[in-house]
Amino acid sequence: MESVDSLVKKASYLRIAAADLAEGMKSGNFRSLYRGQGIEFSGVRDYIRGDDIRSIDWNVTARMGHPYVKVFEEERELQIFIVLDSSASMQLKNMTAATKYSRAAETAALITLAAEMNSCPVGAVLFDGKIHFSTKPMQGREQTMLILTHLDRLPEQPVTGSVLSNALTGTGKLLRKRSLVFVLSDFRSGDYEKSLISLAQKNDVIAIRLEDNFDNELPSVGTIPFIDVESGLKMRLPSNSQKFKKEWKDFYTQNLTHWHNTCIKHGVTDVVMKSDDDPLQILMQIFGRKAI
Image (cartoon, rainbow, N blue to C red; front, side):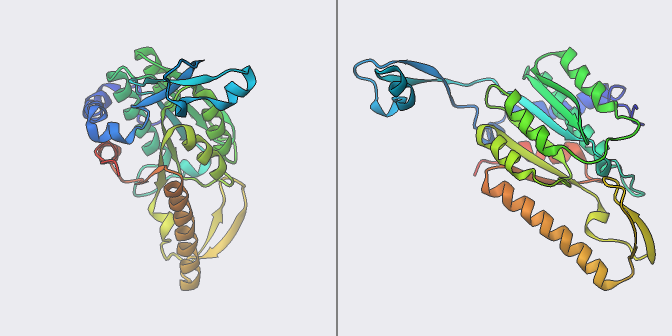
């Protein structure tokens, strides 16, 4: 299913916007966020008299019976990977703003185009209740158009649930070198934390949490029917009740705080994007951050 505002059709406009992002990727502030632009492990070699003993790889030395040292090289190429959630909760229509998915997809498109402009390999995985598309990082216009095309190709009926954890785990296995990973999701999925932490141990991760106004506060419109788009569960809930509205907001705050604390504790850059935010402005803010 092609989205109303096809990203492929908007590619020319998006390229103009992505040009500023491409420049932002070259900035010292953004490069300092990406720890991969430094010294990377490349292998081992025999120990030579005079080598720093701190570079000895004790595991290899024990297996081989004589000393080996770790070899490192400067990593110059920025590699980017996008993990994009297209689950049902991301596609809920909002009367006052775009869906979370449309904002996330536009954000992913801008990142992809900026990566192409800087000759950076870029890859992606798209998922809802199952993985629908995955491609390892590659360079070039063909890769860019492949990703943009799949951003537009949503299934007619999303598979219920979310395999966010599987997508994160699969990303970690797919990436052969340290990469900059953007995770775009509303994080309405259980048990993703372990996979997110594992991914962040070997990569630089930016988690962009998509939200709309109803996540935080419900309008007072009486008792109305609700349906959980992931599970199909239906119930009627009193949106006029102050107690219910408080419980709704408290649940949102607890989840947001848990997500934020998980990110901070494990070195993940956390960003909140509202459905009515401008993706370009949010990305420019990320790319302009100074390293702590």
